[in-house]
Length: 268
Ligand SMILES: [Zn+2]
Ligand SMILES: [Zn+2]
Image 1 (cartoon, rainbow, N blue to C red):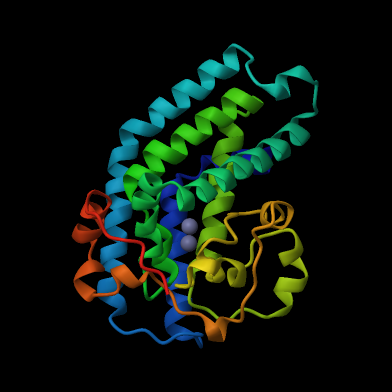
Image 2 (cartoon, rainbow, N blue to C red):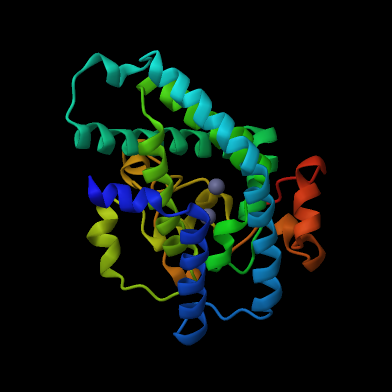
């Protein structure tokens, strides 16, 4: 219990800033699979997304928490049908939040108006630790926060498990997006259950056949079970989206407007 309380006591904004500092520093001092230029400007543009998100969340997280707690007080959801030990319910809840996220993410690649929001994350041609922040705030707030409320409504998951889920997911996000060399053996060990950096790199590959794979955030088992798992060597990877390649389309301002601009899916 104590360890859980310690984790949940940390302000998520502080842990995210700490993770960025660690991973961004590692990218500057260690060997990297890709060599990119203009890291400062890239970092700045991506941080702007996080700043907008933090400001909007001052309001929206409270709504999300209110809705989930309301569902919990009414004991709505499947997990209320069985009496489970605290830790089992906590573990199952984290798994279930990840399960819903997998399906929302998969739908975001299929449904055109969802893709308009989600392609902001895929637009990055020089992926590094700061790509973790490159999400359109409307996607995270309108789509994913609603998804969390739906998860709570169907399964009976609570706010504590959601907070733990977000704590874990950001560690995975930084591992997955960072421009670092990871040992290959990770894929054949932890990678049987968890999403490894090489898995998520495939998801950022420009070729749509690969973009539409490896949708999971924590548990790669969802892709393995539902037939969307693919693997490709890092050397063959080309990040980004063809229609977002010009430099003027890589700025924060353009990307914020981009969901409202029609640009054809132009995959190689
Ligand atoms: Zn995606
Ligand atoms: Zn990503």
